[in-house]
Length: 212
Image (cartoon, rainbow, N blue to C red; front, top):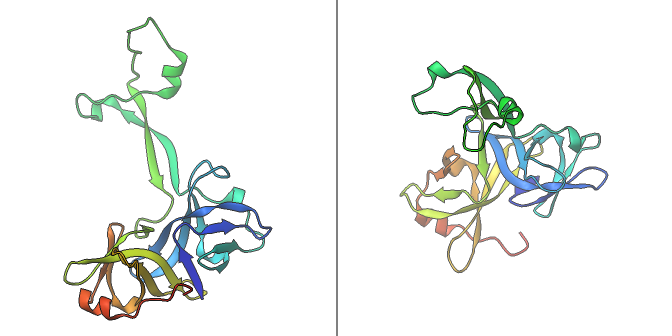
């Protein structure tokens, strides 16, 4: 059983700390976990993707990568690149600059640099298929009667990445944590998780103990 939890530290097989979990990527159709997103920090200048099959063990305290996984070779979660855009295709008033041209031309103070007809536009794209969802830790969980019953704390999954339960944390003073069977999930979007059961049914689930 694997447990993928928000802010869990991630380590390589040789015990190097590479970051902490920021998002969980899953396929909303198959409800299969596909990746985790590791938050950028000192080791990474940008958020990185870890394929689920590259995870050896996962507990609430620590995620270990498999032997041979090179943290330096992980794909970025968001890929940045430039595309050429014909200014005649842009809405009037939009300003698009070619960074290479601007950096090489300064001109008098107060004078805007000239524009190329074919300018460069910076584009950022997620490095995952469009059908996949990057679910942020702490995402709201709603009951079928449209009440927020808590926020996602962690996902329990089999070794091959199939979720069995979602653990949610109550917003109340008690901060109770409850495990929701994956069969109770009605819909998952990047805005949150919609359950197919009422808030009363969620409250009837026995809270987890402090060490569970």
